Image (cartoon, rainbow, N blue to C red; front, top):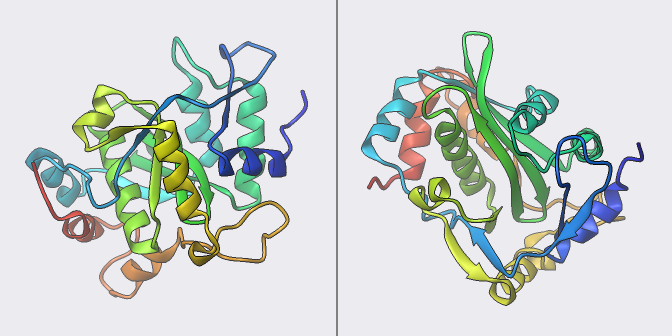
Length: 237
């Protein structure tokens, strides 16, 4: 099994293309460029009162990059999936290089939800999410949006629209409109990091960790940090 070249993957994402497979056991990977694209405006996350209550309660312990490969594997463990072994290993390599990240939701020491995606410049390309406990994936997405907001990101790509994403504020746009937003978020003023330019920094995925660490009573995975996330996201529906 050949791992997809990381530079090729980053180049593909930079022009709005991403890899998929037909099934978990499929041998091949193909490239996708949807005619209509789902994005979630970072300032437009829709948080219901019940979700705000869940986030503030600290019922889930939330981490970042604590179990990347386990999150990808959990996203793939469903009846229908586009994540085959080649994609799984290719994203593990992107993670090792610092270009792919995960958000995890835990109950005690059990991973109950999460998501993963690719970071490039001021864009986060959401790949997949999973949940085995009620609201775990919603909490993971809320933490991601707060992280992107604090880190100065400009675009959260969700690839394909679902009712789940729509309920959280995602919208659907045409591919030309998406490419225009993508180009702006990857422009030099956004500090985009493309293949061969790994020394440059774009938006900061770890900025939220520093914000939480600045308050002695809070850490990124403490119950009190949920109140900060709820405050950062602001509006409710």
